[in-house]
Amino acid sequence: MFIGQDLYSGSSFVHDPWVLYCRGLITAPNLVLAGVYVPGDPKGEHTPVAEAVGGKTILLGHGMANRLNPLDEGHRTAGLGDTQWVSQVTSRRRDLIGALAETVLDRRLTPLERTAVDLALDRTVRGADVPVLPMVVDRLLAPDPADDHVGRLTEDGRLVGHALRRLVAGDLAGLFDGPSTVDLDPALSMICLDLSRVAENATLISVLMTCASAWMESALMDPAVVNGGSCTTRRGG
Image (cartoon, rainbow, N blue to C red; front, side, top):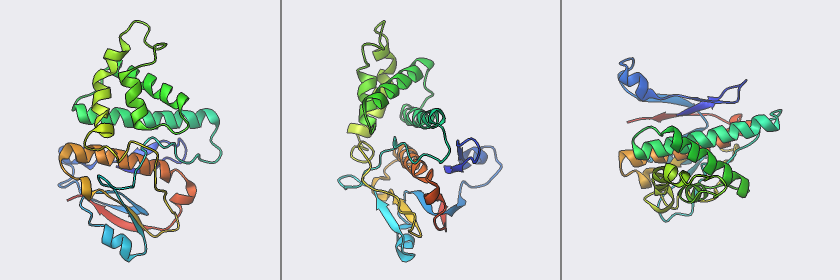
């Protein structure tokens, strides 16, 4: 779960309650999060709360108009140099694609697969003003010939490409495969991402939460958004 942004490095601070649960340090993965936004509500239980306090719910589901682009670069922090900004956005996008692929494949990526992801992401960003996941999938399944000098890159990225294709043409198609159609309004008292329409199985929920959190993280990089309002939400069973 994305908690916040480090003041000095600009990197993300995340918390995984399941790690502490597996270590026996806590007895349940539930936690209380104080903030403006609910980054993912698989049960839809916070929608009435958001509406009651004058907030907004962003509803995601098959056949609905709302779409979130987890590769959005977000808002550039004031004072951040060009090199630092590019490095930060690239790192966040690379980590996202790797996390999605590992979740679907149910294993760690190999060094060769990570190289394939890096090259596919680089080519995608170079060729598009707004990079989206289908472009990365296309680059993984059909690498640029200039990068594939010995004809191995296609094979190296094949499994990752097919794993990510699930978000483009599989059971998550239409949710995270295009430019974002919604924005965050910092003036609202509460914003909730309602994922209850697509909460079908454990793997799907993991992929869904990863994409939704990535989009939320990029939006929360804007100081104007971070400083707007507060509410208390609860994630867990």
